[in-house]
Image 1: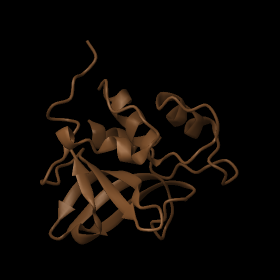
Image 2: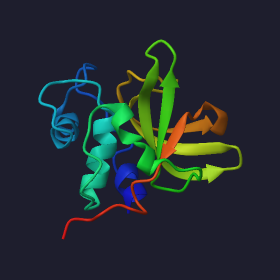
Image 3: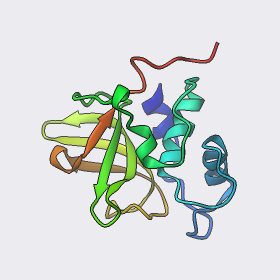
Length: 146
């Protein structure tokens, strides 16, 4: 369900390239944000909300990786975190679509063709496992809204 929801957003682009547009605004609102801001974590939060999960709900990438949610496996629907040394933290996230050997195929908001953290839309990315800093599992222990 999570993967299908995220796949449905593939091809979405920002209105002017400034973290804006009606749909981007919906993602940000779910994460409790009111103005145009980086939205990769908000996109993941929105996907979980659409699937009926109570959490996560944050626009801050590191929030999606609490110790209680860390996973070793790379299952569809798990969240990947990309570490950026210049930020000294996880600064980009995405949702695992599938595993392909040593590679993970992910669905990511606020990225671009080169996989940057300040992008212009929702893309499918192919990332080597070694480039993934952390994986979190919000599904197996997740609570759906009644």
